[in-house]
Length: 487
Image (cartoon, rainbow, N blue to C red; front, side):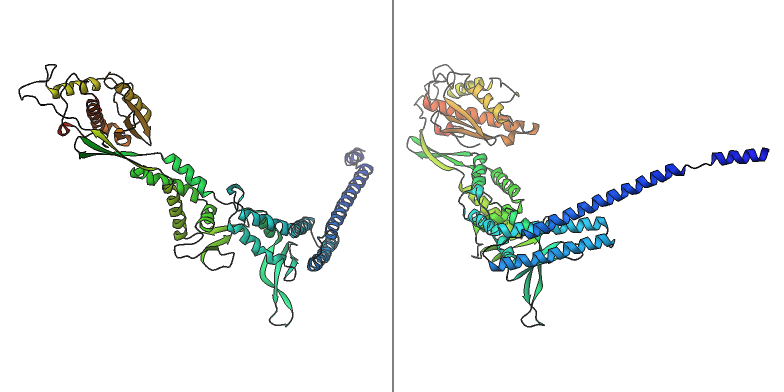
């Protein structure tokens, strides 16, 4: 009795509801069937759409184009139906089928787009090459690429190919079969439709070298030097030269600006083919894609982008850089201004006689310069500093501190050079602040200040000998440095 009870208990614990299991299984099978049907419908719909695309192949008046397009459409239909058969038989996985179908669809779209747009696009690209507007102008490589792919659109010499392994679409150029007279075969010159479309759609713009040269020249600024000559008679000669290249840092600055632009190889190719055109041996710059002879610019196609990359030689890079340097230098100002000034003349006095004022002439000059030198700079404790704006302000403060110099001078700066002129723009002194930078150049600051005070004093005396309270004027031999000499 006890044993039977335990047996019945085990039987109750292991009871299975087969009715519920059967219902769940039925629902699952119906769901799988529904999914398969939906997938089948989607596949059939995609097939119909692909076939419809093929039925819309480009046609026109060109009989060769019509035949060419129809042949491809027939082969593409066979490829689509083959894909469907293999999928339904289970010989082709759905994932592989999807990739192959997408490759075929993309290839067809790119092919038809390339065929329909070739003539219009080629005209646009020729117009760009001939344009006089730098913003809408191309360089030679753009047309060379279009000419290169022109052979693929020559319907009598090319054939559309569908790769049976992945169903990508390409166009191959035909050539005579050496083993079969009168028979044409596909050559090794084959291009994918994505490559052809990429070449059609890509622009290679002209580098506006003129605009770049103009902007760079404007930023170089000016550099003044002044030379004092003895002249003749009562007049001395002053020669002022404005020449930015006289400053050592100018060439380095220009070269750096040029190289920053030439880091883009398409800027270099534009300069070579559109500006220079020929090298110094009169060989025309041509691309390797054009097949022409001359100074050849080698191009290598990048496998990822399908774009040609210029492999430039050192000589080609140097030719482009030197050309741009010459353009910029030609735009820099160069001026040479020659003027004269009246030489101070001494009065005749006895050797033991002192000028009015009780002090010697030299003592009065030194007192005047000392008074100016005592004017405290507004900033940095030194009149001359490594900063243009501060130095200009300090000099203006100094020259406006005494009635003898107030309102008689102008101070300007450019490219770290400070220049002092009179109101007629005659240069009094010119000072390169790069030599005053750092604590180790404090002596140079003092030398600059002494030089400026000498020149301002001598200039002022030459205009009015009474400004320091004496009537005796300095002789030319007593002048320190002369008016406007570059320090």
